[in-house]
Length: 120
Length: 207
Image (cartoon, rainbow over all chains, first blue to last red; front, side):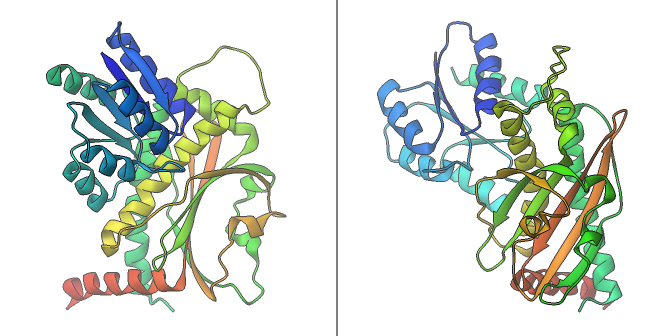
């Protein structure tokens, strides 16, 4: 399984990578710190799963999702964000991603892993 | 500028949103978070006022502040502030790590953790205000600064509108001696929109 984590926080990159790496032992995990890097890596590695933060420098998560929506792909997209605004969550859903609210607790991690397992 | 009913309603809403934010902090540190009732003030920024009133006594020293700015017309900023000497303890609680080492210097990872904690807490409050007034808010990237208060107070409130709404609250993480504060500052236009919304709620309630 190929997993791409797009988040400007090194802490979140490390946390998500650790949780998903422990669960999906043979996964190849790639990291990007903003939407622009994320899009470039996405086209290069064609990941099965992408986790995306919304608030990032250079290119934010919504802009990345809009670019991804124009690509042909079978990747499962998850947005991990602290943004509680309903209008944002609806836009994320409309752009084809599943919204998971931060903080990324144990329960949320189980939820994400379960959704990944169901999709694969 | 605000009557008692409006202040009461605003205090109630802010209490709810800060409570939700505290719940998220509680999830992260796995401890109860005890809150004070939010204090709401309209500040006339042009006049001299005692800015020290905004800063609780436990924050009058070196502090670490995580902040976001938001909005264009409905604009403001929100800040989460902790005493600098408590940051290591807070980060360890959030990460669930304690290597037993007494390292006092803040690392890049500590600042990253505080930025993320601030992002989550402040989004919970500001985003809820956005939901209330039905305005989509765009945020700046969170910033983390080390400040010395009260000397650096002008970095805490950078808006220079004539009137600012300042919402202030402090909290304590149970079983620790970690105290913190949240300060939300809204511009005049934001105050006007928020009050209009609250007036609508009050009309529904009181007729």
